[in-house]
Image 1 (cartoon, rainbow, N blue to C red):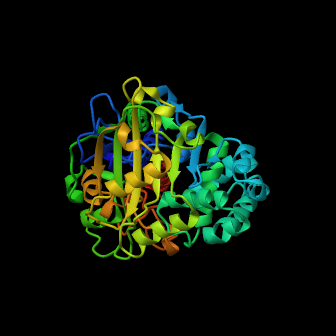
Image 2 (cartoon, rainbow, N blue to C red):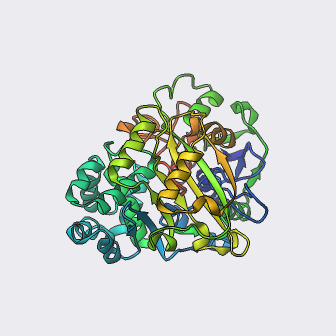
Image 3 (spheres, one colour):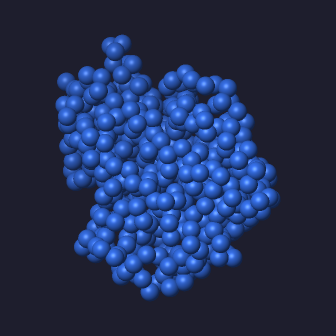
Length: 469
């Protein structure tokens, strides 16, 4: 009998398996698809030689993850590569705000009236970032806070809606940049704890940047898998699990799946009935005949580029997709240009380009024209560089990854109390009605992103139980 079986070979499932194997438990992972990776994969989606990330591409939470930083993933091929600027946010007047490794450079890009306010926002937390990240990403009850005072101060700043936090800014560059940071979790700007989201992304950039993984996001999954195998763990692909009886006997079962799928497989009935999924995304991957022709100079040096114009425009796009159930005319876009840091991702002189916009859950339309009109606003001539494109709306994303219900790449709405209490209002979010079954996906704290911390936290709950039995 195995000590633990993990269902799902995404970053959280693989991290949970590694954490258990490191502590001497026998572990096997079962993945429905024929390759591992979940939200951290790399494929040739357009033309030969162009290596695209179908989901995650830039990794501010990955390089800052306490779980990943504790593992020897560099020995298994994971190499973080940095663009000169972590992120840029072009503005309608042809200038750009930037999120730099330097607080001073970031503050200067926001204009003289907001430079001081930005410094006062981030500088008190930056010296405590490693401890704060560990405390923030380990909640709840998986570890006692190492610095409860700083965590409490962070909560006072971050728990209110981001619109409260941005009142300290007077001009649009700072407001737009921060609104874009919040929108990375597809949450309306007025939602609970959205200020914390924007602040975490800013602090992560100042601490260690927003890198890409050399060769693509698949490198993260491959490094975790290789380490797991060296620890004696096994991985079985092309193995779909429809019920618990499909799995070998084990003392614990850990699911890197959506709550909906877990309830169906484990026979939990309506246990997760109240769990809500958020808006979907429309994703485009481009093969380009050269760099994106940005009007502003700063985006040409940035790994990630936020496309949304003003904070009001970003708020409207999020509201349309999440609350009004319609695709925005001017979608907010998160784009990544991996070739700025990693030229191995495309043939010489060419580029891969990654972009997505927010759309309603399950939306079946085509957002390509709206996306490219937005890109042309800030990079005239973009369409002329396109050699090929691959598109994926919510149905296609859900077909590729069952955790993306309705195209929700966050595996659950980041709104209301669900922002803090996922997947249910419980002090033990990784536990389920079955004492031997656990949930470790992005539907559990700390939530979405390629950081492995949901798997790490769930593994703690599992090994504590296994040592008691």
